Image (tube, rainbow, N blue to C red):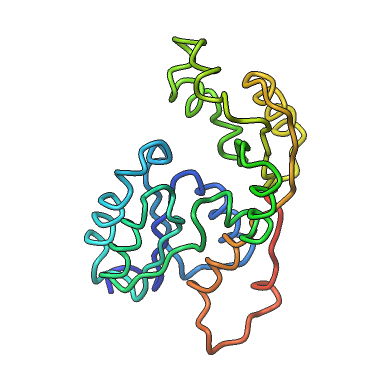
Length: 215
């Protein structure tokens, strides 16, 4: 192996801050992280090829590879790539589901199908990825077209940060949506990464069992 770390995590760039925090808190020294551009969040059709390229580049350099993406709008095409490679990924359809947990997300969706979700990352980059990414900055009239079927915005909170909560409230107001927030912490991102990093035949240490809030 040409890498000192036996495990490589190929991750969505939107998860970079959270993965680095979990690595630090849990002492996962045997883990390398390669983040793909977060802009793929808005271009899901490009995710399978980008992940395949990262796998090909890493081949032979790590004992294990784990992909820190959910399906993320690829319609099963990412799973086809990973099945052919024998590689696992995070559970669920998207980051909102694995942060909230599948059961909690299903309940949220049942309560109000017209829900727009934000995470810490999307709050921080709301203007770039939502306002500019959807062209609303140049054509404000598109807001009503894009969000006509939405009723509320739910901020899934990874970190306890009053400034992010305030920014999420502002985002909801800009989109004309009712505002709610749910504190999820790292959710199934933490358990998914732990299963990749920690061999199943070894009991978890006290440090590894910790699932911390960011900051």
